[in-house]
Image 1 (cartoon, rainbow over the protein chains, first blue to last red):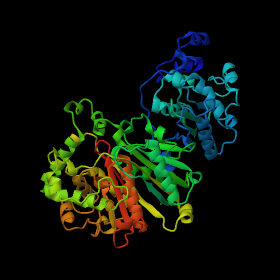
Image 2 (cartoon, one colour):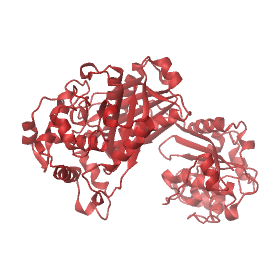
Image 3 (cartoon, rainbow over the protein chains, first blue to last red):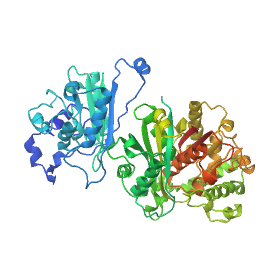
Image 4 (cartoon, rainbow over the protein chains, first blue to last red):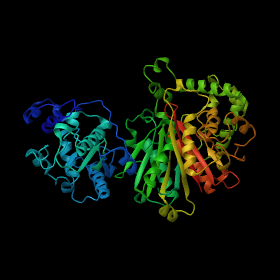
Amino acid sequence: MVKNKKNALNNPHAGHGVLVNADYVLSSEVISYPLTQMDISPHSDGAVVVVLAEEETAKALTDKPIWIRGIGWCSDTPGLETRNWGEAIYAQMAAEMAYKMAGIRYPRKEIDFAEINDEFSYKELQHLEAMRICKKGEAGPLTEIGGTEITGEFPVNTSGGCLGVGNLYELNGGHKVLEVVRQLRGEAGKNQLNNVTTGLAQSWRGVPTTTGTVVILSN
Amino acid sequence: MRRVAIVGAGITKFYRNVQETPKELAFEATKMALDSCEMKLSDIECVVHGTAPDAFDGIHMKGEYLSDGSGAYRKPYMRHYVGGGTGVLSPIHGWFHVASGMFDTCLVVAEEKMSSAYPHPAGAFLTIFDHTTEQPLYPTLIWIFAIEMNRFMSTHGYKKEDIALVAVKNKGNALDHPSAQLGAKITVKDVLDSEIMAWPVNRLDISPTSDGAACIVLAAEHVARRVTEKPIWIDGVGWALDTAYWCTRDLYYPDYVEVASRQAYKMAGIKEPSKEIHIAEPYDPFTYKELHHIEGLGLCKRGGSVQMLLDGVTQRTGNLPCCPSGGALGVGNPIAATGLMKIIEIFLQLKGEAGKRQVPGRPTCGLAQAWGDLMQVGSVVVMRS
């Protein structure tokens, strides 16, 4: 939460950037324990458009085409009573489908950065583990030592994520794809990462669903 | 792109106030489709779902709710929605999945349970129009279709008693359809004597409120050849949007259908649709719409559809049978499932398995078409045996 709200300060599209610390999050109003007000992404309005083109057309249209290397999507059960709330199986299955298509075996090594669904703060960690970017139980400690900061080993949500940009519902995945494209094109402004070639965007359909999508892009 | 075939189909009975939940309807159709081609859910790689406004079933994001009933548990699953055009866009959506090479098999499911919306599902349409220019006029669908029907009639000089023959034909055809809700032997006089809803639209000019589901199984060529001896190929697909501001276009002609059908004909290599298409299922939620769409599909020249009807060309025994199933007017109109019902009718007719409804002459090329959203979406699929 602290990281994403900070990253959002440098994203001109983000409406909810702010500099706070973990104590501030913990002391904000408890909405439904353990979620506090600050753990929940605020509603936002917006629109994103991407233009797709087949290879020859793309090369004629732009010097910096960004290639779609892998896509994956999956729905787990819609039943609230029967699902496994501890794991994000939809994200795991969607990611494996995309990895297979992109020929990726070791996502942590072969992907440089990711935009991960963080409609609620814990979701970023849950999704990172489901997609094998972190081992189970590793996402928390990695975040604590700054491993997912812009300067970290595996930057996550450089855009500010849903927590910083706002919860755009159906468009959450759209703004994540936009950020990955901007990073790969070197157009991410103050949050620009150095030498990145492959990025991953992941989204989730939100409560109460278990539907997730993953796109892997390369420059 | 790869060739894609329909290899199986299932359809529930259509009627009002079914006891089954929407999920059970979807399950029933899905199971029937899989059983019809002796496939199991584990043979299916992905699922697409078409279903119209959430307000009908009374469940927000109902695509999610319906996912496991449609066999999509832990599978790649997508829902789409273009109102009444949904049922024929669904197989197009599924076609992409298989034609692209991403998947070898795909379930296409369409479901609608309209009677959950009280007092009448038409209420769900009160909020679909532009909030500034149109909603203040309190438009209802029948009101708008009355304007369109009037324009269509006055442009071509069509008479109400001629258009009423569409209801006579389709409700009669539906008598032979096991899923039909409103199969009946009626006369032109019955149509003209039925209650006037908004002139020139009478009650029997309109399709009913229905609940139901339909499902087809799509397969890539190498799978289709293994599964069935008679795959039916999807040879052309087309879809198009006109403007949503229906006040700004001339309602006498459906441009959205013409653009969509030209795309489908080009893909299928069809140059003279009126000769090369042997059988058609144009979308007929209102009597005049069948004629309107026949003209838009290029199956006759503009202003020629009533003559075709009077000459018996569109009867089951005619040269170009239209709505041999009984259409939305006869079988019923559970919005998204209606379009897929039309696809299934062409599938069965081309296979020669339409039973009592089978048209003579061994048709080898047919099309299904639907229309919807804010009256501006057209979707067309051309199929060959």
